[in-house]
Length: 162
Image (cartoon, rainbow, N blue to C red; front, side, top):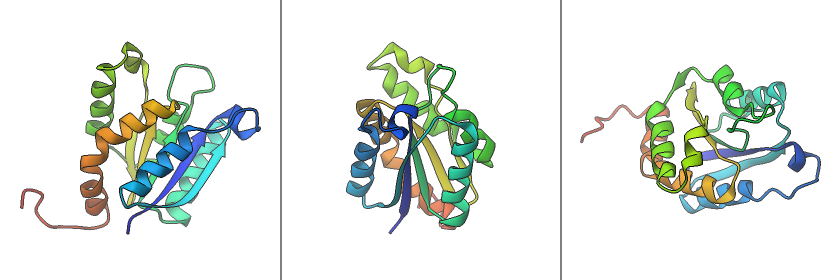
C-alpha cells in the first residue's frame, strides 16, 4: 500500500484561528484511493518550516506521496510553490497543467494558481489549492495517473504501454 502525508499550509489554521477543511478532504480522498495517510499536519505559511517538513516527510519518513493544500496563490505569504521548488529534484509539469486546465473550466481564477508537482527521490509532491472544493477537484484530475506515477517512482521498470 502506498503511503502519503498531507500538509495544510495556513497561518490561521496553524494558530487555531481557522479550522482546516481542505486537509481532511484530501486525507479522505487519498484513503478512498487506497493510499494510507500516515501524516497530517497544519503548519504556517513559512518558507523554512515548509521546506523542513517536506524534506522530513520525504527523507525521514520515506513517504511515496506528499500532498500540500494552500499557499499556491498570489498573497505575500503564499510560498508553497517556492518551498516545493527548493526541495524537488524534477518537476512533473503535465500534472500541473492538467489541474490548471480542468480548473479553468470552472473558474478563471485557476490561471493564477502557481501549484507545483515534482519528485524528490522516490516521493511525489503535489501542491493543491487551499479551497476544499478546489483541492478535491484537482486531486480528482490527477488521480487516474497517480498510481502509475507512484509505481514508477517506486522502481517499477515495466513498459508503460504494456
